[in-house]
Length: 282
Image 1 (cartoon, one colour):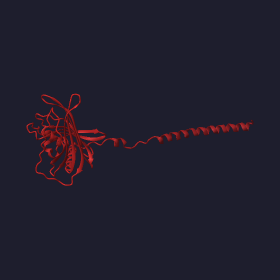
Image 2 (image 1 turned 30 degrees about the horizontal axis):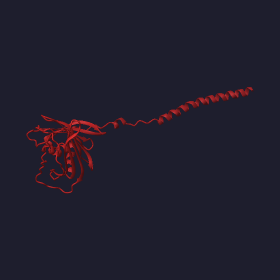
Image 3 (image 1 turned 180 degrees about the vertical axis):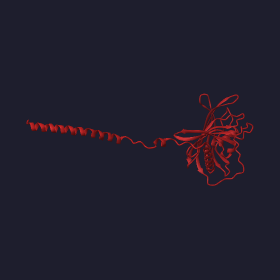
Image 4 (image 1 turned 45 degrees about the horizontal axis):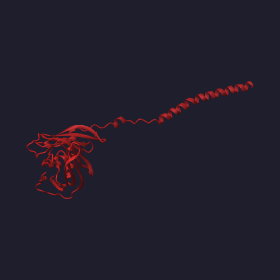
């Protein structure tokens, strides 16, 4: 190979080396750029948006609950519905030892008085205890709706905090009578317990408590659930209780199952002077 040819080969080799060195950082920059583009971009303010907003002040929650419950009662007073009651006593092995069945249809007059039309009520087979008029009163009163919102002056409402139930934010409200229920005035029934209201609509979704006074009788802790059974308002859908009632001479395993259904808007209003609900002798 001639000297000139040798120099040409050297120059070409040097030029190829320089070009290769320039291409390497460019390729690295393109790779880094592609990784940067493929990575998810941070969302400004995401941590703030993901946080739950603080609940309103307790006094506002209680006031909103009362207003909403008044509307729910007014709406319910414009509906008829059916109620199937099953009261049972349970034996030591879980067997049913007695039953009380009372299936009815209800409507309300323009003053909120409740009218019951009994559809099916066979003779009770419960022997270990007696179903009293207070039991019947509670079934159509506190066990249906909890606190009587038209008599809020008789109750003390206390905000108990925020909870999560079925992925839903709810507010818990404790309900206690301002005056101690009088065991000698059994007709005056008082709900004692807790209600849970939806954090957005302030509608009651669940009620849990007991009815007082007891006197010589015994009453179970019950739970009533409400659902959007007709339109946007939540109405009672079921009530349940399962408890051992301790009398002086006997313990009775007592179970309550109540279903509310067939809600229909009642076009006209009925006005009555007096309502009496005397249960059949047990």
